Image (cartoon, rainbow, N blue to C red):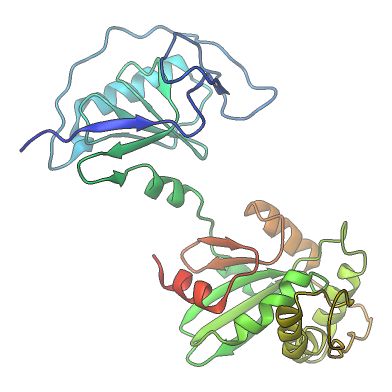
Length: 303
């Protein structure tokens, strides 16, 4: 079997020692900081590593490559304070893939020089880095927090979808029409008010949560007619250059009760979510922002 040809493509030129440079792809000796985090990280190499070991990749299972164990030892010795989530052989002999936080890099068995970018198989025209990057972006579906959301079921409800929603967010309102078109889906809505830009969003979120019928109160405040009007007019709920008057909406009765708003804010932060709407699939993929029903349907079906 012929050895496949590979090449490195650097997205933002070569990043050495956590800093980016525009000097092409030549690599110069450098130290790597001890932590993946930004400011305050300890830097420097604290231990030396011996000469590179030669290894042969097992085509049946590249991770049987003995160089993986040698590299893990080298990385631990060089950067004892850095957590490496994954260390694996690639299909290209002598090149290893390492994951630190959400960063993917490539190195040799010594772990001294790092290339940050994408690895391509030029024979099959496949980007070998993208699947790993996508997997690293996944979050944990909040299955243990569904009591802090209210539920809407379409059809069989077999597909699960969590949404972080702000009741004063115009994009959330625009999304309602597309969500109504989804079939066989269970939607869990987590109230997530962005109070810094929508001053009344927290009060509206609490009022909706405290209503006797949360879903009906939500739809009265975020009506499909207004959502469709916004899409048709290209306007906001407050007016703008609309040719026809905006459909009415019913503001929730401002009451207070025990609510999960603060818990939802903490949950969103733990998942790296900072905007609305934010959709989370059952397998942990995140779709930020409003999207068409067709796009959401395809996204839900992708694995």
